[in-house]
Amino acid sequence: MSDTGFKNIDEYFAGFPEKVQNMLQKIRKLIIETVPAATETIAYGMPAYKLNKKPLVYFAGYNKHIGFYATPTGHLEFAKELSIYKQGKGSVQFPLDKPIPYDLIKRILIFRKNEVEAKVKR
Image 1 (cartoon, rainbow, N blue to C red):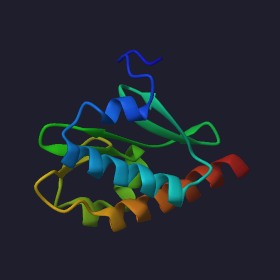
Image 2: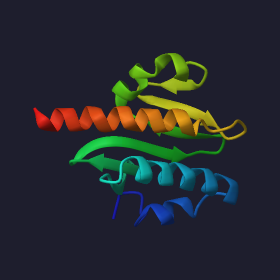
Image 3: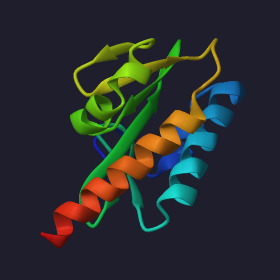
Image 4: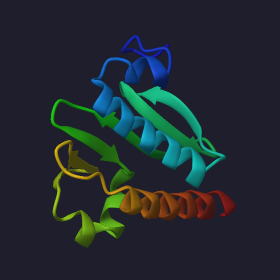
């Protein structure tokens, strides 16, 4: 069990309104479909995905946005496209009142997958 008390991602999602749960589930499904070898867990109090035991991405629900964390490299690679969103170091905020950029998330996932796999092959 994580330090937040959530046993799994479904339990984490259950604490959000249905609209937000649907958005979170769609991101989860996108991750699983794009990187089927990724393992999911709770880390830092949020859904976390690892590939070959290395961090892939994290995401979290908030009152007004969904936070997406693709480590700094995922954000640097897509800096121009992410520039329209509020950001922090290694994070981006997708507002709940705007369409979630699922296409962009998928491209970030593919980038991170390739990056993690390349590091493992070294």
